[in-house]
Image (cartoon, rainbow, N blue to C red; front, top):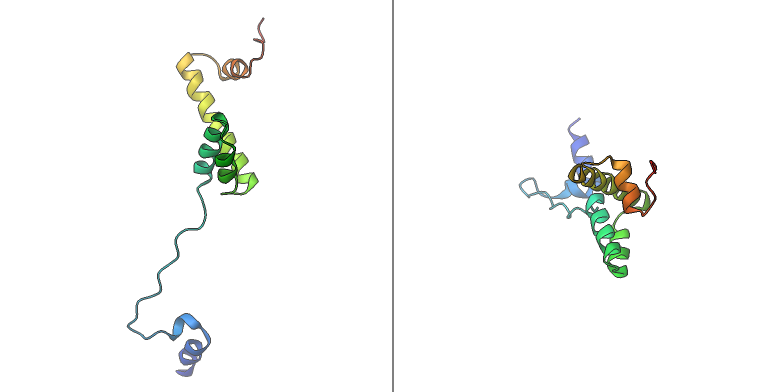
Length: 103
């Protein structure tokens, strides 16, 4: 039974280091925060900065970016509606230049 740990040390590269050696450092996180990517993407689109928008879009998957942009839009709409003391639908229609439904 004492041979099993020794066999594992020979088979697994990370187990070959000396007993007192520190474990290898973990690589930096490779993923990007989808909300950060969405914020940069939307701001770049608003500023007509195509290069920055493309760079932000390449940070995360298209589905994740879509989710982040949707979440940003919802939060922004709620904030504007509260500031204007209007319903979110009225603010959304106003922002898009659509006629007021009640007219």
